[in-house]
Image 1 (cartoon, rainbow, N blue to C red):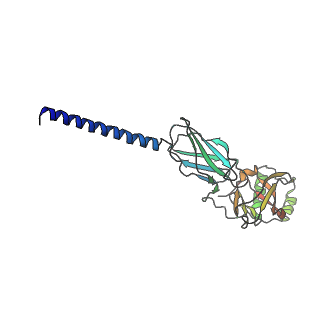
Image 2 (cartoon, rainbow, N blue to C red; image 1 turned 180 degrees about the horizontal axis):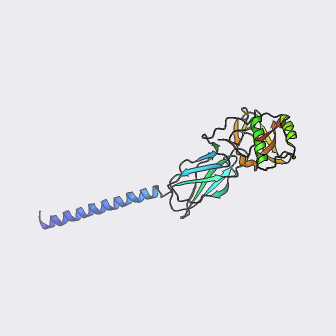
Image 3 (cartoon, rainbow, N blue to C red; image 1 turned 90 degrees about the horizontal axis):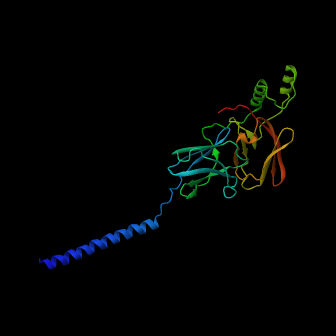
Length: 263
């Protein structure tokens, strides 16, 4: 091969190498445009109804996070509002405790804001009972008597006037109470609402203090089984409730939330 042929071959090879470099650059450019550097999708998280709170826990691989807000709603679709911020948003494992849940079903989602301005929402999660807590046994009359006695020994006002030991025994013997089949307190101190036909019939529930003062209302029970965290009631003691079906009185009774509870 003479010098002229060598030069022609080298020029052709250079052109091929240049075209290969340009083609490779174009491929990576297209990939970069079609696959933007978006934050990873937040993994599932849990929201468990415990005693005294609803506990949210999740694992996050996020970095460069500005803040993570916890948002809550009663209907799972609209009216989400931020109730607090996660303390250490860049930690791998994180948690948040809602110590003032709302009456009814509590739905949660996370709002993640990054330092570069990007943000995203997590999926929506319904708070469910903690399976590690045995809440199957209703409080019975004997439990209520024990709870009242324990509260009196602790110097807590149970809403009754001071009495002598003899009068106390007589009054306790005259207590007529049994747990409702629809709304009752369980061993963990929370309040269960059990209305199997709730999805088909419109039930509403109102709660009152013992003196008749209105406490709060659940306008419609949408699930056949619902747990109200005891923190909603703000204090231990007796509470009255009224159940309505299609606007008509269905049951009027009361329940007792003990100061202490059993897991």
